[in-house]
Image 1 (cartoon, rainbow, N blue to C red):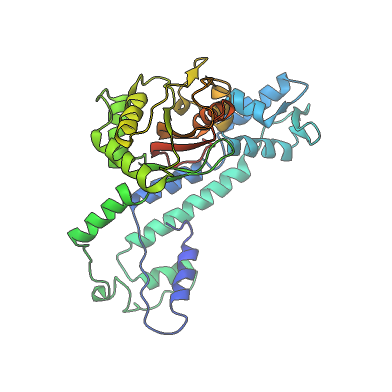
Image 2 (image 1 turned 120 degrees about the horizontal axis):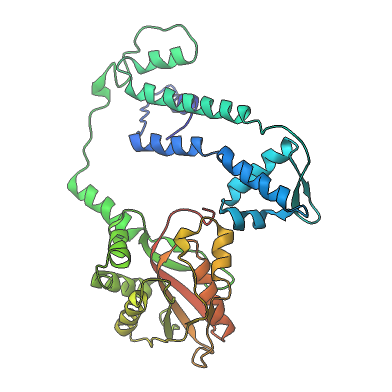
Length: 362
């Protein structure tokens, strides 16, 4: 959904440039408004986080780097950078490019948030304008001319309010609905990008509220037992169609943080169906927290760094399939893959049941 009504007007103008009959359809879902409101209200961190960052810099007279602040506060990289930029602009801190550190400047006064509040209110008003446009029960064109500051004219007699026959309701057939559902659940496979530690790979589905995501959550967090047999069958099919099945000669799984043998059991079932040896070669050498409870990439990297070891002679020269349940930030998968490569694995191909849709910087 567009955030500015003016952009919608521009798009309408593009449709009618050739002076032929054109249809402009705005796809609107009330949940989109909630999402946009969240982004607008959280574009700048709350004032208390500015105070936290400034206090840390005042305590550490030698200065702190961006990564130090992220690790200590749990703020995302974007939020940390916004705070540092605002504090530097208002002369509360200064940046040393050579050492990449920030230090506090001795000065009195309060941080001025008025400019940020003004921008936030303006964006919320624009969002409200779009809601009013969608909900208006009179001529759409009349609403737009009023919004642009022109004199309200007569009804256009063409829009969806003036002549509803121009926009008859459309209900997708069951066949189309089923095809869309299949595409979203099984036809569209999220890719795991190639990294220095591992090759490119795939996930069966995005996590979210997909059917696959619900099955994973039920087993992982709701004590529903092993992952569903259907997931095993789908992963086997995925490996046979998307991976270099002729060269993979070993399957390993990411050691658990909390879920016991859930992933290992799943990986062993996949290995049995594919006729590929399962290798129990990854050892967790220190405890880690669940990545989902950490709030930025700096904390997630620090949480898993050096946490795994692979020293078995069985690894050397093998092409391995590395299986996990959920791909979130990807740092744990990369750390395990790196341990396998250091132990002599020729290459490592990752595969997870689901993948979250957000970025690493949460």
